[in-house]
Image 1: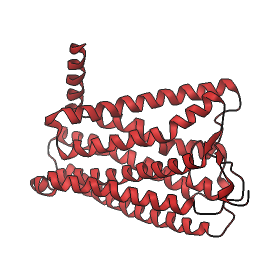
Image 2: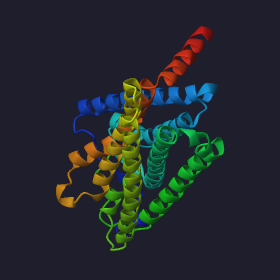
Image 3: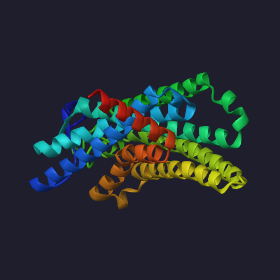
Image 4: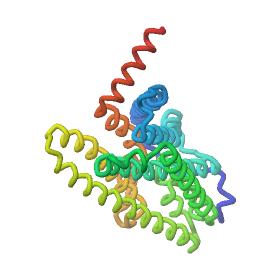
Length: 310
């Protein structure tokens, strides 16, 4: 294949070699998808319907649930389809759309996690200024900035990636279209443009990560000054899971995009990609709903009302 214009489709990585394992992977991804859809759907419904949950924290949590739904619906359904029908094909246009949407939702998620860290910082370290710093207009502007910047970022990456000449076949070593795998097919030094974009992205992500770490250092210092042990436990139980999700997302994504080719392998690439593209969408509802009494009560009330209507 001389260039990208001659490529009509790509071949995704098969999840298994035998038919039985393919069906097993289909069932596994189906269970993960249903869990993510149920958990995030309940959060969105509870926050949207519960007027007492119309606070900055739950507003950003609703946005996070939307990004989780979007990210898992972008990658997993195609992998399930391929496993069920024993195929590997994805069209050129479908691959470009998958890259665009996946980058958009993942960038939005990281931005929202950073904003949620700021929300925790203000609520614990500057509680008297919470209403001023995180009013409804400020929250709307921050969410809009997160979504808009993520869209521009993903559009730039997608346009740059698919403008590269591709002459090393059409076989992608991943179960979804991922930029590092597409760059491996490039036959021109122009792929360095995309590498520079990735490096800039890593620097921005590192800046956000430093902000998150600095914020949590201030949060933990404030929490340790709380005289009530129950209050300290509540604050730590809110912040530590958030830190775990941020660390999982950043570490696995950076490893996937910046690892040296010498340690690359299909099984390792697959495991790492699942950790940052699928697992957070399932973990976030568990972390943020099961550990929050207000949200659990709202979900129970909503479910009870729904069953009474049936």
